[in-house]
Image (tube, rainbow, N blue to C red; front, side):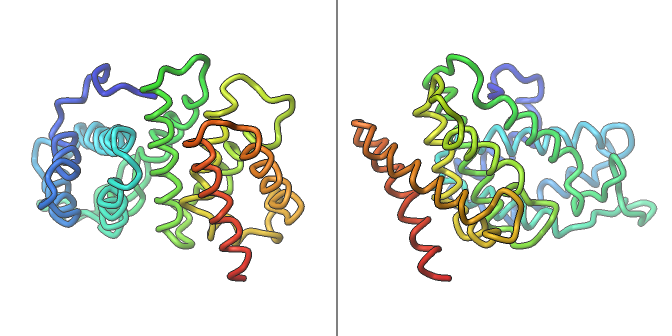
Length: 249
């Protein structure tokens, strides 16, 4: 995970806005969106600085999410979904702003590879307790974001990333080092995004009914095998969500 203290952009205005969104209970996602768009249209941002602004916004979002517990992330999710409903124009020319061939902010430029960088970094050797916590927060955020986006293709993480973390934990044999963290990460997807995952069964490749049932059995076995009460609780929540969506179909 990327530690904000190690980034050169931690002092940016984008970071200040999103950290304030979480820290200030009276600040709304709508206010954060307005502030970001004001930055987007500021004279110092347009032109060559637009690339940095897009990246700093994406990086600020991912870093703030990693530092926020899942139950605190709803404002960030609302913020991003509202931000991407805006096609921002240059106030001088009236032209829609673009970066990397994507409309700002409808196309969420830089968000795709920023998020991918963070997700690729999860699961490295010997994570510290803080790194493990940030990994769990990041996956919880991405899973909740995926659940909130409906069929929007621009925010569709279940087809690739959910499978990556679920199969890594529940399909790999033998069990690897840091298996407990891998299981927790897989559980985040079922806890926060079970309905969307289940909606892909059995029509989508890899989301077969056989695979789904195999993942459920693997979690049931893991629940029996772990002695840690918190671990059992996390797995129990994941299983409850899996059974809930199965019963609702």
